[in-house]
Image 1: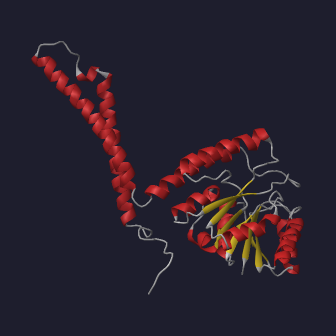
Image 2 (image 1 turned 90 degrees about the vertical axis):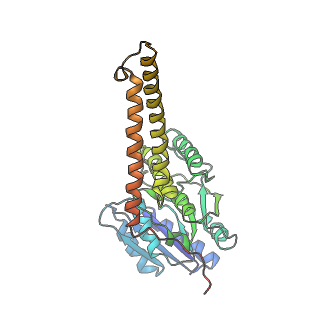
Length: 317
């Protein structure tokens, strides 16, 4: 099978028939073998009934329905689990992503040998205040922290090698950082393609301002785990040791100064009367706690089932 198209959705009954027909036309024009996987994330309208109707007339249409709304990440995870195509493409169901982009995305994966290609909606038709400006700032922060030079990391229109989607686990709200997760798993040939963005035709956006705050926190989480997930002592132990040494050095200086002042009959305040004493003591306590956190992390990892899980690309036997 050439292509698996995974489309998560929530309350998109108006757009589904038009999106389906558009995708089918593109598939037939290019002669692709394909499957179209709709993942209904707990819709309360008639979306699932529409998917059933589409499946009845088109055997390539498959569907997954959640009992309630779990979020986009679980929807993509289940869609990736079902996908069988050599190339997996995701897009939103609101008709803001154009299926006409599929052939070029497919070529970049199958011919140009990219592991992952992310769409870049360079010209957007969203509100400048509520989405465009926050999105630009958000993606700027993403590029600086992750080191992946994508202009629109959260674009729903992406293409993957099958091996990529089978090698990563998406949970929480980590769908925003699939390129970061893919890079951490060793799939570092990541490309970008400028794609056409269409104005929303039906309904309204399901995301608010909170996604930018939550997204930034999730980025810090996934960046930390990708670097130190299997070696927590390298982070906590190093930072804890530096903080402890800083506090101990300053405390040693205060103690030495107090002894010098006493021997030379130089007037000096008691150590407990100096704020710097408590600062140095706090540094030593925090440093010790961070070192202990790293040590406990190593103990947990030693007994974890994932301690020796690594992705094998090829073998010769």
